Structure formats: structure tokens, C-alpha cells
Image (tube, rainbow, N blue to C red):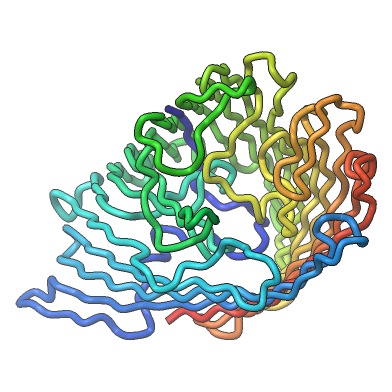
Amino acid sequence: MLLAVAGLSSAATSGGDAQTSDSEQKKPGFVPPLVWGTERQWSLQLSADQRVRFERRDNFDLDKRKADNDDLAFVRTRVNLDLAYKKLWRVHVGVADARQVGARTETMQEAYWHLHQLFLEARLREDSPWSVTVGRQPLEFSEGRLLEYGTWSNLLKLFDGARLRYETSSMDLSLFVVQPVIYQRHHKPALVTDAPHPMRHAFFYGAYSTFKWWNPHEVDFYALGLSDRNKMRTFPSTVKSESGESGTSSRYTVGARLRGPLMKHEGVGTLGYGLEAAYQWGNVSSDDVRAYMLHADLNYKWEHPWKPVIKLESNVASGDRRFGDGENNTFYPLWGSSHTPYGIIDFVRLQNLRELALISSIEPTSKLKLQAEVHHYWLDSRTDSWYSGPGLRDKTGQSGRDLGDEISLVAKYTLTKRVSLEGGVSHFLPGNYPRKAGKTDSANFVYLQYEIKL
């Protein structure tokens, strides 16, 4: 069982696909809504979107001696239907289709036409700040570090359960109890992806709050829980301690986030900041959990037609200090993003990580945004794993911490209010840690995508 809370506002300079917020899900579609009733109290809205992304992956194992380069594409299509009665209740039904094209290796990103979302959102009265949502739904909190719906992946993060929300101009509070939804299944005996289904053995629950009474600053507090019940487990494999003992897992996360301006120079720009910290405890089988996460950034936004922004960001997520000591110190980022916050090549996540990044963006026109990023990565614990990327581990700690550097450039062009193009390039230079494991070659990533929203 696990506890946590986070902030709602997006980071000032997030690359890649933007997150899909609650308000975006309710925007009118290309087809005008069908409205009827004596007071036009009923409405039926149809909407759809499709995203196609082409990728070139070079040397992702950091070893040119192995022929692992790949050209591939991902296609995701979604169709949504919303039936609403006044502002009292809304039924949302969504179907989706996710496919990969031309991949040399299985990317686990396919699920043909399937029920994607199905939920009821209701209020006791139209002006009530309280609402309840029941069914299969997304959950979006924080800036993507702990929990996001996401749009980069073909297979998006969903949950089955109930969410109670209290929302006013000064406060946004959510209480929820859900089961995570996964797409993976065992198939004689391979692991494949298929229609989403709940993890019967796992429960995710907690409280997330955003306070705006200190305007223009936002203050978030959160407490989340994730429970794995050993007797109900059907997938994935059994949870084991460092000594190999099977059992349940219970992880609790509490934290806080603070974001706002430090000072404003009239006619020049605004200096802002962001802070977040979270602590985890509980157990993984017989091992105790003791882990933490820290985030800090400084950003400056110029008052200029090109809207230039520069941000210096640092992230720390603890790693396991010593294997076999009966204590697990690796921070688990729940269902947080692994794409935009830490570079677009996806070689790291908020787990056993120290990161320092410089991110800048400009908008030369109202339709074009350019963003450049430089990241340097270290392991927090030299004896824990490099999660994501080549996935190395040196239990002796003799390989050090230096993972390497990533340099990226992302461009997004909005053709119309419904059609956008996006592309990016990234270059990863390995540090001393992978080099000592024989991973001495650089990696490259290029992508180009279009998205249509109807």
C-alpha cells in the first residue's frame, strides 16, 4: 500500500506531446454536438484523434558491434463519445487502436481496437464543487513525475475505480481508490500486449490536493498508496525480496510541491521556481522500503514576442544503498513520465538518478515552438541498477556513477487548431559507468510525428 500527492500545472518547458488534461478531454469535437430537450439539457458529442510517429533508433545498447538499429512507426487512433445531461452528469465512452509498424523487435505497444475509457462523472447539483467519477479513467496529477495520463506512449495509463473531487477557484482536492490497468498478458509463455485489463492483485489509492490561496503560487500536498496482495496476484510475476523471498509489497508516498514566481521585472520578464519532494516507505516482501525524491528548478520567462524561456533543473531519486541488507532504498516513480522530463531518448527515469538539465525554448511564430535541452545523468547509488536504457548494474560499485549526457532539440508546428507536426533529435554520449561495461558508443534518436484532432 502506497501514499503520494503532486501538482497539476505543467512544467514551463515540457517537450514532446503535451499531457491531456480534464479540460482538453471536454473540448468540443470537429462534429458539432447534438443537443435536444425542452431546455436543451441533453447533449451528445463525438470526437476523435490520430497520432502517427516515425522513429529512427541508432545504437540504443551503446555498442556498435551489435546490429540493433531500427526504423519503426507507431499509430494510435482514439474515438470518444460523451453523453451529458446539463452539468449534472456525463458518460464518457472511448475506444482506441494502437499499432506498431516495421519494428525489428517487439516494443510492447500494440492493442488493437479495444475499450479504452468508460466512466460516469456526476454531481448532486449543477453548481456543486463536488463530483464523483466511477469507471475506467485517467488520473493526472503533478508535473508528470509521479502520475500522468501521458500521450507519448501508444498505450496510455488508465485506472479502474472511483474518484471523488472537490474543485473551487482556490482548491482542488481528489480522493480515489482504483486498480491500475495494464495491457500485458502471458501467452504460451511469451509476454504480449492486448486489450487493457485491471491488475487484480494491486490497489492504488490516496489523496491529492492543490491550493491556490497563495496566488500566484501553487502549493500541492499528496499522499498515495499502492498495495500488492500476494494471494490475488495473477500478473506480473511474484514479488521477491533481495534474498529471494516471495511476498506482498506495500509502498506509501507522501510529498509536496511548490511553484510560482520569485520576482517580476516589468517589461522584461519573470523569474520563477519549482520545488518538489517525496518520501516513500513500506515493504517489498520482507525488505523495508526507505526512499525519497527531490526536484528543484529556476526558470526565466522574457516578455518578448518570441516568448523565450530558460530553465535550470535538478532531480534526485534515491537508489538502493547495499544489496542484501534487508532495506530497499530505490525510489519508485509510480506511473510517472519517463519521456519529457528527463530527455526524449528515454534512457533514464526518476529511479536511482541524479540529473542536472538546462532547457530553453522560443516561439518564433504563433505556430512554431523550438526547444533545446542538455542533460547530464548520474546514478544516485553506484551499486544499484541503471533503470531504463541499457539496464546495467555493478553491485561492486567500482564503475562509479557517471551515466552520460543527452543533447536534444524538439520542434512543434501547429498547422491548424486540429493538426500539428512535431519532430525531435537526440544524441546520447556515454559516461564512465557504461564505458567500464564495454558500452562505449554514442546513441541517436530521431522522430517525426503528426497529430489530428477531430
